[in-house]
Length: 76
Image 1 (cartoon, rainbow, N blue to C red):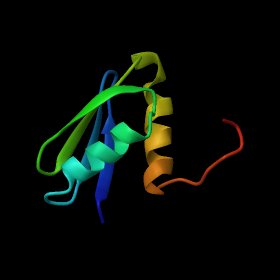
Image 2 (cartoon, helix red, strand yellow; image 1 turned 180 degrees about the vertical axis):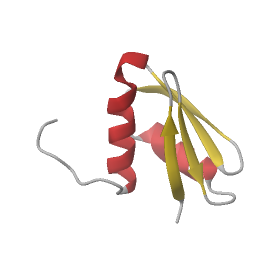
Image 3 (cartoon, helix red, strand yellow; image 1 turned 45 degrees about the vertical axis):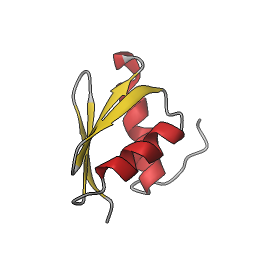
Image 4 (tube, rainbow, N blue to C red; image 1 turned 120 degrees about the vertical axis):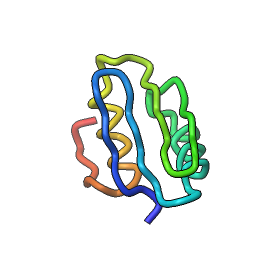
């Protein structure tokens, strides 16, 4: 399992990955154009900076859909 958990606060999203998979997950997120400024990947965690903190929940929703934690909806 590449992504274990996604957490967020008022300003940043943190994606926890399996060991050694953060760079792969971060690159995948960067390629998808999810309304983010960019990512910073370590060994097993990716920090995701949204373009606007007002849309952080939207970014988290898109990340969850990208990795298959939630189903696609027709309201986008």
